[in-house]
Length: 572
Image (tube, rainbow, N blue to C red):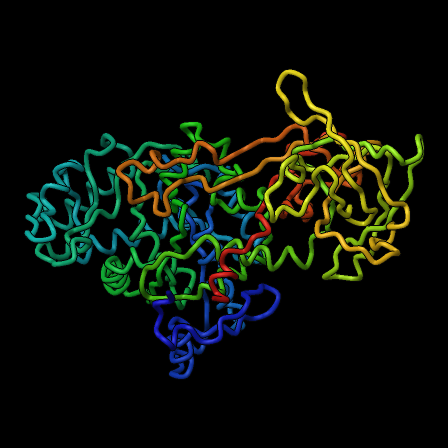
């Protein structure tokens, strides 16, 4: 159920980087009002500010689409800025992956690539200004003592015994912190605000801490690093960001954001919070995703089971489908959880138009057509995509021996089974009618190993001259030129719709999330497919060529099945 207010649900359309979005929501209402009032001379300047401490996930895609989309809509600018203030958790690998993901989604920051570390000297000078105005002090309490002094949500905090240091003493100590005179964690620079504030973020928060960790950009130039809240708002100000759009967990941080800018007397960006994306059967915490990687539950950040943008890309999601999904869910002020079925629906809608139809047999069962001439093969024409006539057609080889799915045959079928069984006739897609005459079984296990059939040579058009009808149409691959392939079938990574609700989210990991099939047979046209190529395997779903593919040994990931649960819900 959509809990947004009516004004927040207006006319959601595709968020497309190539053209301005016309979506309307409460954030755009604020921007429209600011522009009407002449605020910031009518400028709209946003930014996407990730911390380079992990790979981006589907929740970040929503923020990317929102920030770049708003800038495009109002002919403004959007920066890509890395808030790289914690070198102990950051890595160049993450920086590179984030830039790749933003570009893949279809957005371009042009010459506006920035880092909070670009401003380290300016941030240091701002901090000196806070000390000089009596708004910051150097504190000798340990991190544990600071937490103890901070109080609780119901009890006020206590002032640090070092809060009364003189400006001169604080300036001296802060300089010596920068010069590396003190041990890590032994001193911090804290804002002097209000230890009795009802907002715990305002209780003399830390501005700088001592941390001797080499930075991926500044090396060992610094041994003190600014805290995120301080660096973030000051970086927004330095860049002239008009609308600092962030998720709801930063709402309680806004007073601190405002306090820093007001005390420093610098350009005041406006922070606006929106509801983050929560998705069923998914965790959206980089900390938890890092656990999955480091503890070997997945093969890496780009594992197709991961909700990372790189994982979704490898799985076969398209940037268009993700942008459409982000725009469809819209922007709200209240947290809610979106069904993963909607994400899959957006993907099907996109792939249905672009993915060529091919035939692949995932669990092969050999069929010998006894009355088909020995040594003969012929070509039959197959339409590539009925949704797009311009995609044309291809020729398939048909021969005496073919493969069908094991599940398409039953010896003793129930009443509504319309596929192949002894004495029954079915149609082969793009080819002939065949009839099952006999079954070959394994002597020991009784497993069906091979079918012997006959075909009607008069049914090559897919119809019988005498007008008889068949109820089943099966996909198939010729045994003569079919290519062996590996196919990976994916389910949800978690068995629970809300893995985060569990005491340990890892307890809900789905042990059957991946099924790898190594004896599949596919059309020879798939041999030359490249990683990222999309196909609809008839009757089996949408698939994507994986990065593990090699010439003559293709590997395919099932991106999504054909069944659209979201569309069925919407049509009820």
